[in-house]
Length: 242
Image 1 (cartoon, rainbow, N blue to C red):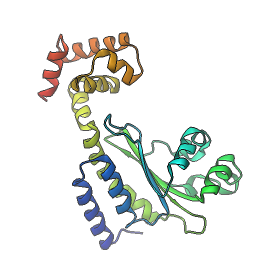
Image 2: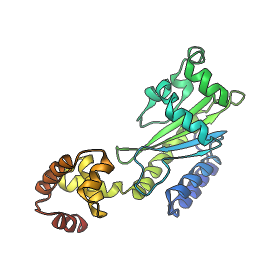
Image 3: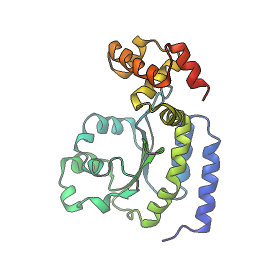
């Protein structure tokens, strides 16, 4: 089923609105609300796998309470078979494509978490930039609703790369890509350089990344060698010029 001209116009309008947002919270709200004009859902959720340091929340929802999310995050995510199957995929997926529902409905996860919340049909996509997982979008319908269709998946597939670009701007991932291209930094080295650029000390970096101060120093030695500098000041000056 092809995307109609009317739907393309709604997609363009949504992308224009998203391009004007200046905070992740407002972006998430506009994104979920806008997709509701294209894909009907009862509940929706966006989860950020690498939230920005200034982002207080790592998820935003429509219709899903904090209590429900906390219950999932503290226990039920361990039982979530669909998450295990679909995690970090590049294409949109609906639950009926990958789950054997008669068997699934008898699992603890389904009977104790999905059913009490009236969650039945799920559809989602992982957002990447360019190949790093940034966020997961999930849309849910009740059992009395129709399942998500191929058109819904096609819409998600077409617009998710734009979400990736937008979120990469918010989270500084485009900058990470420049550093990786120029200096072959690892992800951990990018994290350390980002924290240094914001004035963090070795001790603060260690605490932020849950590593030891000695490990931070070892990473800094590798970073200095890759960039060809001898100090933090020279490093910041070099990367700032890119």
